[in-house]
Length: 423
Ligand SMILES: Cc1cc2nc3c(=O)[nH]c(=O)nc-3n(C[C@H](O)[C@H](O)[C@H](O)COP(=O)(O)OP(=O)(O)OC[C@H]3O[C@@H](n4cnc5c(N)ncnc54)[C@H](O)[C@@H]3O)c2cc1C
Image 1 (cartoon, rainbow, N blue to C red):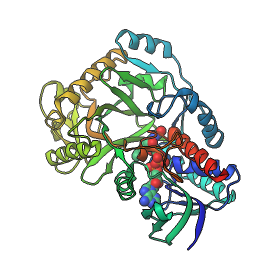
Image 2: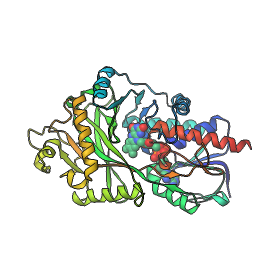
Image 3: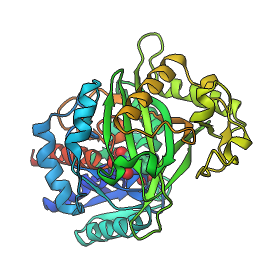
Image 4: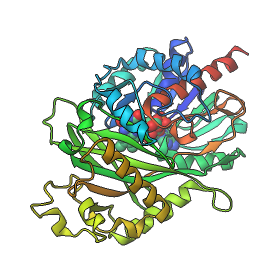
């Protein structure tokens, strides 16, 4: 049976971060396994990179002092072009008056059309550093007692150290691995909300600040703002679709639209403690009410307390076409729990005071946007190690929620592997 010094499962930012750090430190005999033909997640999409703590870093696991040097290491590989910002003080003052916080973040944006060349250049570089990469290979079973990973492509492989970084799409699989290997975890946090799509002239802040991060009361925040050539997409989860947004690079013609998520973080307590289960229930409810597709509603209709219809998307008053055309016109208030809806609606009103225009009747709200990524394994140390020689990092393990933080979490696991290899 083939044996590796380190096997890394998942070639998202967390897996890549670990691989670059280990190969850079001179470790040989590293295998990176990826179930798709190319890395997925945010790197494959819009690839907005945030270089300021705490964006993307769950504060339960990170401090600013820990994240900053690792972000410098991420930047040394990804070489971001930091976006310019202006008029930030003005927006910050307006926000403060309302009890809202606007974070001032160093950001870079690649664009969906340029992400594949970026990923290819990263994997080529890793190969040139001696890392073996297996695409279209899925890790199925892990028997940590025997240090064996079973894959569909190469059968059983033995490892000295294993880093598992399967991202959000590997969330359920990771739960299975933890159960099979007796690793305790909780999964009680989930973000639920909407994606807002508006004319750029009704959300002009994007001309000053590419992806403004507002933190509202009641655990609501803006997330992943897209402008320029911006589109809404749907992502398939087991039994429902969640919406998401992306935008192309500045090479593509702008479509005059903006989209961003408005999410509320829910922390469940006994007896309902699975964020993934709660997401599933809400996702399915939305699908049932809207014929198996995400739902969309114009703000103009919502304010009048009525559902949107096909005509809401044709009338001359409602003056732009939705970019997610398959979404079903409906009534979000029938599908979203009251507490979440109230807090999201209040946040929208606050946002409209800070950036007047976003509540124009034509603005569209899409539901659901769900981020269920908070598997929280019981770590035995600071390196995201769950058993000796077994590490879990990235979004799937709840140690990050963004590209740069996932990369940093991979570096932290790599540091743990280096300690093990020293012994
Ligand atoms: C559409 C979209 C757009 C996004 N845009 C941004 C953005 O602009 N900026 C930002 O900061 N964040 C963005 N995000 C979030 C970002 O993608 C994640 O925070 C980040 O990618 C997490 O990194 P990761 O390495 O933990 O997981 P991922 O990037 O999801 O990578 C995990 C990898 O593991 C593979 N895998 C899973 N299970 C197995 C298995 N059993 N065997 C082998 N391989 C496996 C998956 O195929 C995947 O390639 C976006 C997410 C999505 C879905």
